Image 1: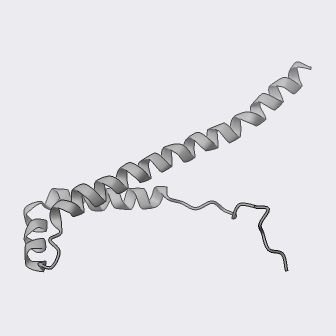
Image 2 (image 1 turned 60 degrees about the vertical axis):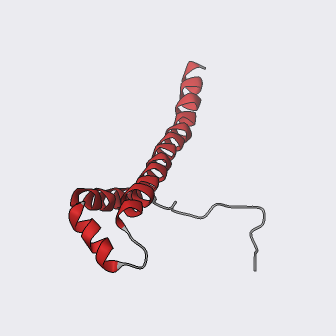
Image 3 (image 1 turned 90 degrees about the vertical axis):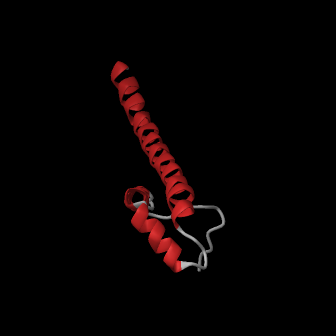
Length: 93
């Protein structure tokens, strides 16, 4: 009887682990996206003036590189699931 309890609790631990990993990855995506969009691009890009944008990128090269690295990191963390979710509204032919 103890063995069954251990097996069931072990089996229930995997969905929790996957949910925590997914939550951590989504947190990275949200924070990374906010940094890359608001701080990096917001300070570097001047709309309608390419020369000013190029000057800002040259002046703040570290910010530009950090924004690029963070954007690549959150793109890697935004991995889709292997299969689409099954819903009751699935149309069957």
